[in-house]
Length: 459
Image (cartoon, rainbow, N blue to C red; front, side, top):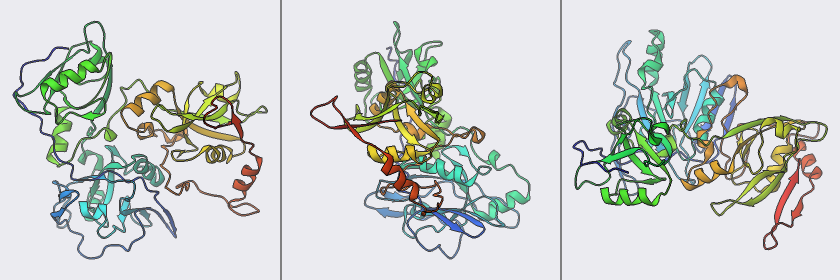
């Protein structure tokens, strides 16, 4: 790979002002004439002035809380303020700290019950804000549950764009297209490059003596260009690791150690400028992965007389944990017809992630519906890739075509509850299907590994 002379324009990595999106289960409330999804622990709604307030607080963990550098202006009459952007980041013990609602007589997805002292409130989210964008996707015209799934599928980090309620209603009254108020491409790009006889097809330049500032020159029709690396983009991560502390020499060594394959997180100058101006940190969880060769697949199957035609087996993952894998796919049966391949790893069942579930719980999910099931899977190469960079493939499953029946899986709560999936009552109560499924399952032990017991189930 060719290393260019120091470049005069530097990209400056900005500290993250928001914390990552929480993975705790988001309770769905049922209220007359409203749809409400709680993205916090229960709390009362904030009262008082809803106008934008720039508030800086020092937190020993986070440093200075700067909610957003682009806050909506106070508007009079029919004035319309500007959208505000928040990168919310959290750990698994936190929630986002707000409720997302649809209300009778009001348009839009409304932020309510902003938890006092919670993550959303600390960042500047306000009661009555309307949600316009999730991770760069315009959501004002989407179904409420679909918007919730997009937030939940983001895992521990989400980028939100909101407009204050007064400005939202004014813009609607004026007939303005809200999507035109927002940037159309605010996502970095995740690119996987396989070198050819001439190398990876890109060069790196940066200012002499400055760490973490690398701009890429891309050879036309080379491996990097084919992998989707934009010319002149800025390098943010190499093989899942931030380059902000790398010197030019260290980066060259890391690239050489990558062998024949390398994964880059890159941002165009426009994307980098957007995040920098808003005081936000660019991360891989927000990336556009459309250029990656590794795709999550959704398989919808209707059970035939001989069943679905596959074996579910618990086994070790390359990351060291355990997972549920699909084997013995029978020719001509529903699983094979739906596109299932030997060795696929199961990620979600009927729109719900199985992360954290054991074998028996996964079997229960598959058997929950008598005659059909929808599975989200990934092949071994894709599974190994995402585990190598420390990201869940479910982050990048899109649901842009609601007519197809595709759904972005939502992450389960620590308790393993099913989130948005409704439970229908039967003659023996709402959980009778669980009891009957449990009684019908026969779990056997696999002899493939003597030192560790494994479970499998035929469907």
